[in-house]
Length: 198
Length: 210
Image (cartoon, rainbow over all chains, first blue to last red; front, side, top):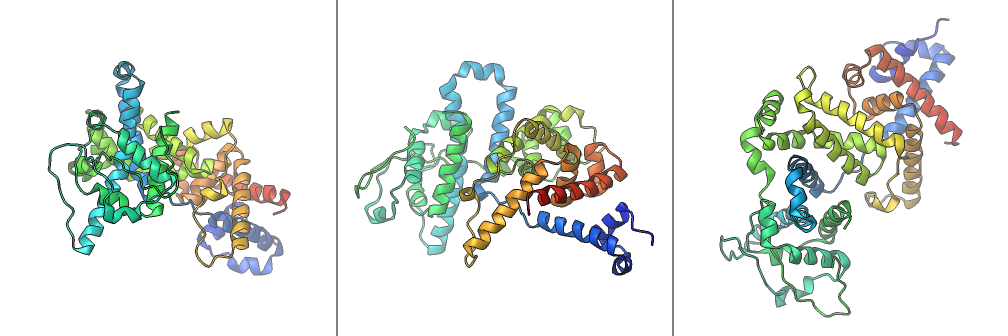
């Protein structure tokens, strides 16, 4: 009996070619085919873990910064380490905050309340945790990190990163973060800091 | 200071600077309808936002490719960034003879193979993986994770071309012709490489008592 070629076995595996009848009568080919099929089964049982939803925008931002950095290399040398650190950090933080604002605004819309807008000018917001929402503040490292980074991000750095600073409902946005969202944000910021070897 | 731990139940008082990022898509909107060739032309004309659109379209597939080679999120992220940076630098060399996706895959495969040839792939630590679904038996999850880790380690031991072929075919589900374009091989060679990759993978796994 003539056995199936490697190419025919592969076609059978991938496309279910019309050699199935041969396998019923040929033990050699059936065993070879089964080995291929089982190995393919192992491969298919391993999906790539889906990264955080924040990751994709973060990746785009990293690429943009890398390209800008490569293109502006002579200038960036004169900027100094601290300035570049702030710039990168502004990008990382902004991605996270953008998501928070969206999350907050969606939830506010759902509950029918309107987040107060302080104004349209680019000003930092200095506020204390509202008394009525104080219960919602989680006390852990990831929360502290988000707050610290937000504190350390000044207007100049934000402007360097091409960001628009908008005061408004950030208190509520931060306070309404779920544990998972907060960990995601802290993770992004930490990854950026690690990348910069700070 | 990067972290702060509050003691006891003392409620912190803090100041937050609010930054709302203007999404890249807002800039990219006028470009989002462009074809790949038009985007490349725009990039070469100095419009960096056009490259942002390219990144947005291909970042998932590039990341997944990189993840298959290195097996962990951090390295896959770094490699993805490197792939796009190399693509940007080499954009002048893109002549449109293949699709942008194929060209990016080619850069991705070369970047990953160069990286993993000097670094042993690091499998994602268990606690970095997604949480198990509710109802999953922990022991089943553990066995499955261990099996996946062994398969990844076995793939890492395949010859370079077989490994690349296997990843592109089995995981990225590219056609033999697309893989041939990416690897600069014939379709026949791709099929042969894939067949032997599966065979070798089985041998390696059996050697590990799987």
